[in-house]
Length: 255
Ligand SMILES: C[S@@+](CC[C@H](N)C(=O)[O-])C[C@H]1O[C@@H](n2cnc3c(N)ncnc32)[C@H](O)[C@@H]1O
Image (cartoon, rainbow, N blue to C red):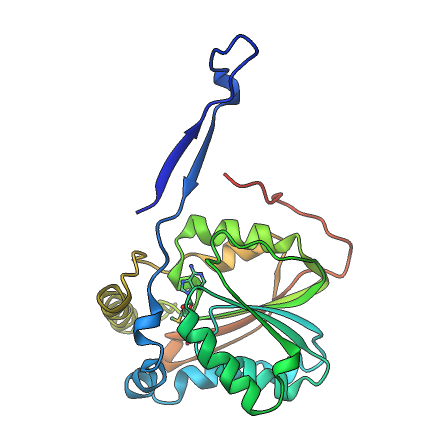
């Protein structure tokens, strides 16, 4: 559960200055993926076969000129290993709240000799702030579904301030497709089932996929390419901010 803290700024005479009162919402603990880190890959293959992997890797050929990536919640590091192998000048910063996932990720990347191009931070992405600016790529594969609408909005706004002109944001997600009633119903059932399973296994509190396309668009991202699989249940989308200097439509103020 998120906790709400009221910080009263007092005026010189010690009385609370109403107009200055701030409300800070502190998120509850992140979902505990440590518990399932070792089983995650097997669980994925048993449920979706190679489909999630196709989705994650689809845009890699378009990203081989990337130089600095910020990757949230990459899990056991299959995407990072693949993109580091494909993009020889890329350096990547991986952020994940699960130390077990990060351990697997580092091991995988080290095994192919790319460890020196990777830094890892064990942190809650909902409160994480990058150390420096200039990222030209942000990656969130099946990660934004671990955040609420508001948390996603705040993450995108915060990270946006650390991006280079022309930066790209790669998202893979489940979605309810714009399709027949039957396909939509099936997708709803699969997504609810996944949320129920992750609630049980990791304590994930989120119940619905945030509206990330609109939230990215609000921060100036334009959709570049989209691909979908399984009748639209899976989507991978590459968005890009214009080359012009940073123009934040919604400044990254923490609400
Ligand atoms: C559903 S898994 C997705 C893993 C991988 N990206 C994939 O494509 O399958 C979510 C990942 O995000 C991490 N995660 C979940 N909530 C997080 C948070 N608030 N901050 C940082 N990492 C988080 C989990 O530890 C896990 O590695």
